[in-house]
Image (cartoon, rainbow, N blue to C red; front, top):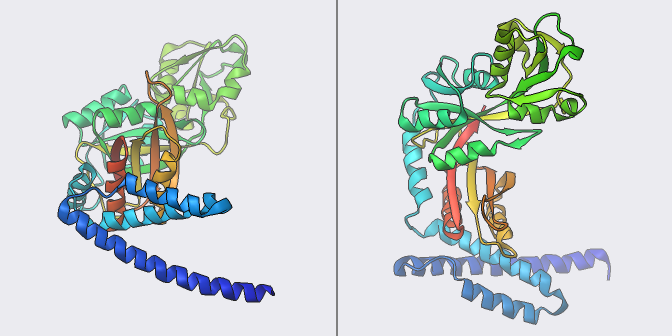
Length: 378
């Protein structure tokens, strides 16, 4: 048989498959109406398991492919039912309130909690997010979260991810612990330099100060040094300020070029970071969740049962709606026996009813689920 003839037969089978698929989805909608009327859950694992057992038994040597086909059909049917079934979920309530609160444009000013001192990367991120903002400098990430949670500041800005060093997990933990929401984000190109008092050479240095993230981003350079003590501090700008005020000609700071000018230091080495493609993402956080116009990114923290196929079930929900997953990172749960939580970021907008339905279904199926926000990145 010629290839063209085989393809004609495939086309005919595809037409039948499409008609049967549409019939199946119609029936799924009838099931949704029944479940809604009788207050039944969307997921019926016992029913799905029985169907899959029958399918794999009848599919012969192709049972693996049949299993995945019908698993996908179940996920598509559940996604459609989730759109049609009304039920109270935490994420649904939160998203609807956030959309109602975000009808105004994103503000250009306000009191913003910023970790560090003048000249830091957090300050640069604040200036980009709030061109006319009033900054309140605090010492730690925890202090930023506390200032926002207490209402002292309406907004706070924190680093959440670096292209070289990964997620800032302490910030994710703070967002969870203080129940704070992300309302906007921005991305800065970070350039680290080795700064000293004027006239100091690299051979004179016995101690280097910087933030832990910057230390990690310059690890190759630091590992090449002999007899030099690396000392973490609160902020790269704080490190530059410390060296400038100490008068110590054996000390250096890993900081930025603006900090050299700000604190009267000299750059003696501008090629110390592991990668030239070094970006840090900063998020703007609030106490009350708000979704402003233009939001197209969603951040989540989830956990689910440790069993085969559990992660696939989550990802299939996204695939069913053609949602792009831009971040998936696992993090071990402290004190547990190989349990993990996952940080997810999606390209999606909660104004799309199908996206909200997907989030509600995800909340119902996950052991832990926290919606961190739906926001735009500038």
